[in-house]
Image (cartoon, rainbow, N blue to C red; front, top):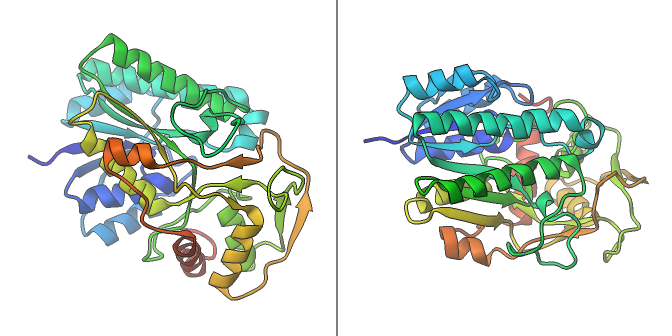
Length: 336
């Protein structure tokens, strides 16, 4: 029988790419999204690429009655939980929004799952749960802390999931700590479409390249890194989507999985600018501005634990990220 997967936030950047892979892998997909940070058009494109459509419900994960109705109406096997606010800078300014949406939303979802006896979940966490790490590469046994409310919200949810797993042996939980998602589907039909000014580096660079923005702002060049700009582990969004599929399959054999999803390589902001210049064939103007609140110098992972736990390794590199992101940006200069 075809398994039905509920994907919360399935119209978002990572959610849409994962929904596509799930459909292509033969799963039946139900997407729940309130479209506060995403567009319904993303799911139209997913349907075109997959040759079949997910079921789409517009709604909020904080709506317990709606969730109860969904679990009652559909025989859901597992949940992949993306829905949440995700901008580090915004979380510093609006912490209560992040605790309400991310933590309360996840609690409400877990309560509805427990009520319906649906006990499989893959959770979208973040490398921000490591705070400012003492060293790199970061492995899963590093101490956890948070330097901003976004990271703190993810950490609270992780603790909730671990407590749930200890309390009830029926639960099977995968916690995936992402590093920096980038790139787009190779078709150029789906990709990252931020509301307003981009918070993440790659869409910011791409919007400068396509002419929507005058120049790139680089937040600080006085970090303790090789060129003074922040170093991050950039992972192709399709590799990340494949990680969710791998984790879902691995839950057949594990009760609690906690994995970093990254490439094991750190690139500076200036590295990324130069790589994108090669992909788009033009020089990109930038200026150095003040550091952002909550930003750290360096963050990249060691992906060997993910290989052992969920049989996953990234297959795409920096060149693929830049080429695919540029294709998406050229085909969709104003997003969806």
